[in-house]
Length: 218
View 1 (cartoon, helix red, strand yellow):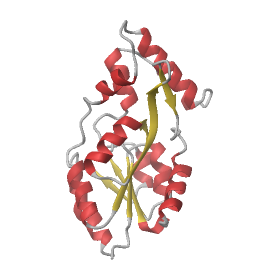
View 2: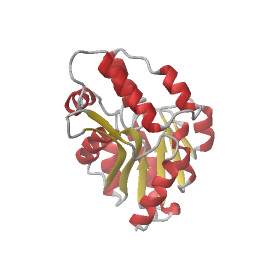
View 3: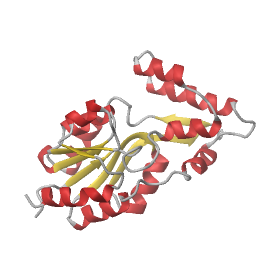
View 4: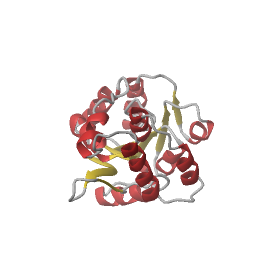
């Protein structure tokens, strides 16, 4: 039986092409949240404040009502990174479960987790309230993936030594720290590369199959 039981994936920039699905939506509307992003990085505003500011920007840019259906239609344009589906299928054939922990949007995480047969997907909800207005439920704070992962491992009764993690930015480092083996993908950020056990330089994720298959047998 495989000693690796779980693979934990970031989503944006790791399994799906855009570095950020939030930024992808901003690109759609032609809006710029750089000022709020700076404040968020400096921890001057909360996740909720940050997302609420995003939603106000989106709505201010169009006469069309920006609701859950509209946002999801934008997210449906997003494509997976080459080899992502093949990699996950191979992990499952090696009896390794897969999950997503993302600071992105739940609709997108659920869509691809279902398509690929992944066990769980944890992200942030953008849904309509009772009046049909867009609201956010923050489940995975941008700088706090570690506690989310810990609760999942406890729920699944899996130890850190039985986990591999795959990510592309510094917010994924808490995943790396709680794994037996960590993989940096789609990144040239030395902070991420230096903390990872392996740096995958190809844009095709199927190239990870021999690396992970070897791990699964030891």
